[in-house]
Image 1 (cartoon, helix red, strand yellow):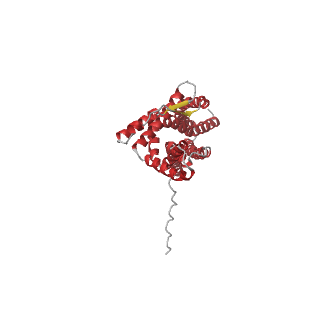
Image 2 (cartoon, one colour; image 1 turned 60 degrees about the vertical axis):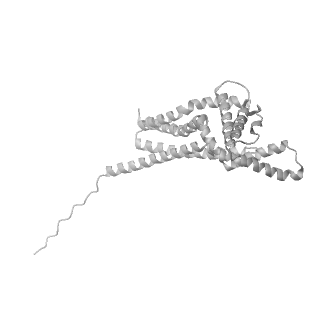
Image 3 (cartoon, one colour; image 1 turned 60 degrees about the horizontal axis):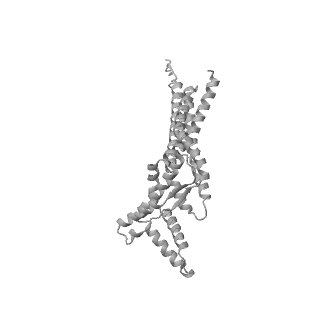
Length: 298
């Protein structure tokens, strides 16, 4: 293989490796971070105590209650304040945390089951198990009249039928990409370094490319957050949605920092190795021979 071909092949392999590294991190996060029930539950559980999420839930529940209860105009302000404080106080209880966990896991399990199967139609969640869990928790806490809370089968749509087919195809792609993209990235990087004429420069390029890819992935996460919040309906709290987005992408942002650190470390190591090699090639500094002492004439 000629030097020109080796140089070009090494460059192509290293570029592919640097491109696949952030894509592999993204697909792996989507598959194992969001798709795994245990990890999803661990991510969403702390949000039950988030102040912005609690405020958003209190506002939504209050609006729903007041739509069903007719109040005189002059009493709307005090009643709204009273109901909101009551709901906000409920969000500090174990029953609320149980309802939060049950509702989130029910929606997650329903979506993942629909993505893995080939059924048609919208994805819905029956809220009866959630209501039953809250009722049981309140009964255990000896809440008055808790045993009389009705448990009705109420279905809530979490994913429309027209969006299911597109998301299912994307999920199947993630199942393949989540494993093979990171493997391919490492393989291409190793092959590019082996083929290169100057392996030190190839390692340097790989480190810089990895750091650049991590930076671009971090920027994509930030842009995605802004676009997601800008597309929200007016009645959805942006602060609460931002807290959920940050919690879901926390692992991905950590991976970005790890890739950036690794890339910069490899780059620095390659630079130091090059400086050391040049210093050794130059050899020790030459010493000029000392001049013989001048003879003193008698």
